[in-house]
Length: 417
Ligand code: EPZ
Image 1: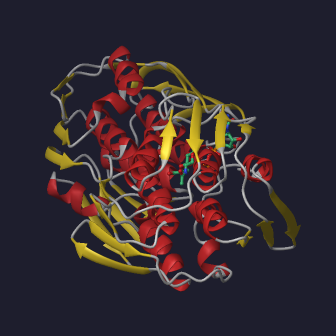
Image 2 (image 1 turned 135 degrees about the vertical axis):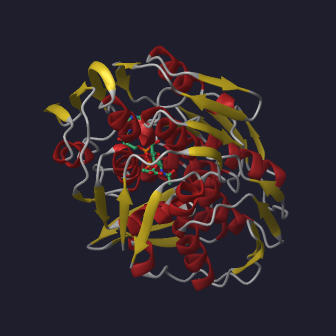
């Protein structure tokens, strides 16, 4: 599928942010801990959710959309059969079935996960943490076989504050005998949202917003109702679009406390916006200044917004440093921006210098991963002339109806299958 975009249209209006992709994905997996019904609201209509639900159905989970953004899930008929390899390969987040399956059953075969090629993304921290809880694992050519004879609570020290590893270990520790402490746990908003959901199911978890999370195991969990937090990456994407295109746009239904460092960095670049408790009103008229953009684990600048800061830097006066400290190959989108006229100097696998402002011209470009794709859409909207973006179906993995949202504020964007 490709997007065809005519740039430099006048954009104005309001965009409502959808529920957080990286919250709902672990929460769908966490429903496995209970046989009772879970009802989840503010679920984004994105293809990663569809894939996770397809995987859950394939092992006996019953899943229904009971509202435009509401899921009702019940796993009382779940069977411990191996997951469908081709489904799992489509989605990196399928790794999140590891923890809950081990909490409920004694073994699990995890096919080598797929997903965005943005770096090595090893599973070591997942497997080391689960081993500490009493699991044994071995690697076959295309999967990991993990098993245990009863999970036992213990101290788990993560060498890296890996988001999905933290989530997997929390979900397994919920069913372990005794208490588990995770030291160096990730504390992203979506990790906290998962902890809230598990707590609603009856789990005993403390320390959710710190780097040490304590879980007291128990042997049964109830169903739960939960509303997914707004997606901070969705919000950041549309805020940066408004700034780069110097548009008057309101981005609403945001959790501002999840974006403080992002907003402060944008303000230091000269961004002009007002805020109330759930919205940001952008009305960018002045010029933007270059900045030093370094991605960090929460609460620093999230790596998922790095490509958006990259395209913003092409419109800022001066030379910006884009330093992607987490992933070693998440700068690829900059070569597509160069084709459009951006001035980029790649220094190494983690660092690039972007000098602006440079006018961007419409080109035929290619989307490589989800957030890179978002950056290319922003570039196309501010470029002169027409841009086509191939592989644009990748955007549907993480952004709900992005072309409809953009058309509603005046963009000229068409979807061509
Ligand atoms: C999760 O992936 C997200 N996916 C990613 O979002 C996100 O980019 C990533 O966390 C980082 O925030 C989901 O939640 C489903 P990691 P995950 O294990 O868990 C290095 C998107 O577009 N690292 O936290 O696989 C680590 O070595 C996706 O929504 C450090 O260097 O990511 C690995 O290379 C893309 N230091 C990379 O970061 C640390 O302290 C990601 O690690 C922690 C991690």
